Image (cartoon, rainbow, N blue to C red; front, side):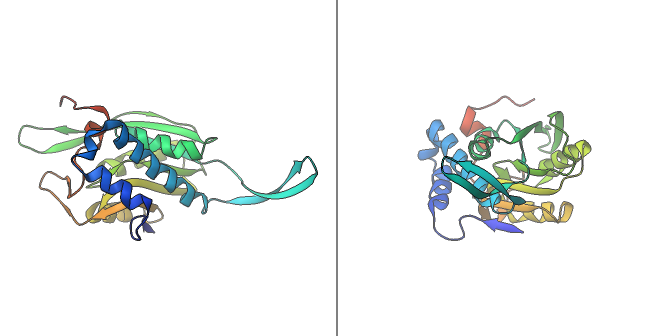
Length: 216
């Protein structure tokens, strides 16, 4: 399943528009906050799909039968661009476990690049609901590699992918690799550049959130 959170006009479509806007995106704090907000909305929507059960809760005046999650999800992110969106997810799933991966595009002089994956820290993921966020789903190559790495820590019960902007190409890549996954997008763009960047997209989410980096 693919869910475009901007398919109908809402606050999400406003926040995505601000992420794209070259004037507004110069405000790094606002840029990070908008990514965080999209993560919060995605959390609420994902929560409707997690397994729950009825639990007796003692109030000062009696017993209430509350519908609560059977288990908390695991929230994963790819450093560094995913950190603000991760925080938004964690704001709502405040009891969740966390997982962290380090992946990046290593660029070559001929303009090509490869995905380098160097670090993972996570709990046992066997039979867990996994929510992984990455602001830009472009080619999907790095996300597929990261999810495959996560799977070495156990086979998931379910997989939810959260991004601010996805390309149609990236969505098809994810659907081919993980047909059981649900993809939650702030918006969906049609095309990629020759270098694999989303058009019109918003630029480099990591640089806009945290400052320009040197390439190694």
